[in-house]
Amino acid sequence: MAQTASKTVDQPTASAERLAVGSRRAGLTDVVGRAVPLIFTLFFAALFLLPLYWMVVTSLKALDEVFADPLVWWPARLVWENYPQALAQFPFVRYFANTATIAIPVAIGTSLSSALVAYAFSRLRWRGRDAVFYLILGTLMIPNWVTLVPLYILFNKMDWLNTYKPLIVPAFFGDPFSIFLLRQFFLRQPQELVDAARVDGASHARVFFQIILPLSKPALAVVALFAFINSWTDFFNPLIYLSDPDKYTLQVGLFNFFGLHVVNWPGFMAAAVVILAPIAILFVLAQRAFIEGITFTGLRG
Image 1 (tube, rainbow, N blue to C red):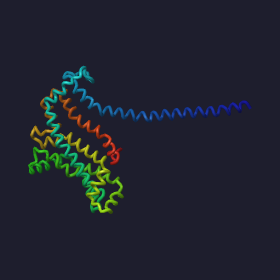
Image 2 (cartoon, rainbow, N blue to C red; image 1 turned 180 degrees about the horizontal axis):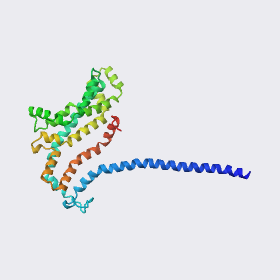
Image 3 (cartoon, rainbow, N blue to C red; image 1 turned 60 degrees about the vertical axis):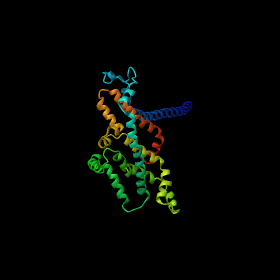
Image 4 (cartoon, helix red, strand yellow; image 1 turned 180 degrees about the vertical axis):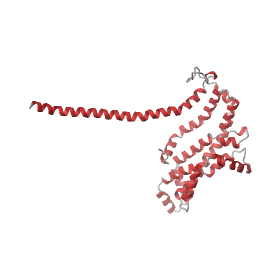
């Protein structure tokens, strides 16, 4: 009888111990499951930030520390003088104004023209709409080098060389990727709003400007930011179409700085940091709208 009572007491105890062990294992598995993705994320984030870190650190090194062996990961003394010296040799203000003169109209033109085309593809019903849309998407497969010579000849015939027109005017005729992005966003908007406005007698222009655009601020912010960054960092097109040094953009000017001061690596990196700073500041200020636009347009993974 005593043995039976002992077994009865031991069975709940053993069950409780098994539950405790299982709970600890589940907790450990949960911790590992969260830690592994975090470690991978931090690792690849560090790899991504390494070139940026090296650029900033090199801009603050002395010249003899740039190619020192072993590598100097942090300078013995921060040489802040590299920045004023680089800006004295690099007309940053002029190149900044030239680049802004191109990038701001490009961002505005790309956003407005792409939104108009995207509205036509998402809200208007017309024969061949899908075929034309797929044709526009197909142009994304065409390398820029294929159209370089024809465009150069065309702009030469129009007497646009050595002006900002070849860099600005094409943005007002839509961008395939931006059209796709905005079309996906417009399709997510309630069709009932458009139908109600049309029943009340609103034209498509009024629907577009008073209903669609106010609801599309996050997507428009993403398109404008992409267009601005692409124009700001564009090196090849200004190099092809501009020949007057007074009209150079920051990227072309930085290339010339590299050619004139090839041994001054700290100064070169300092100039690169100064050029990168406006883009970094813009991204920080527009980060919330950028993330919302990416989320609402369905580009997230």
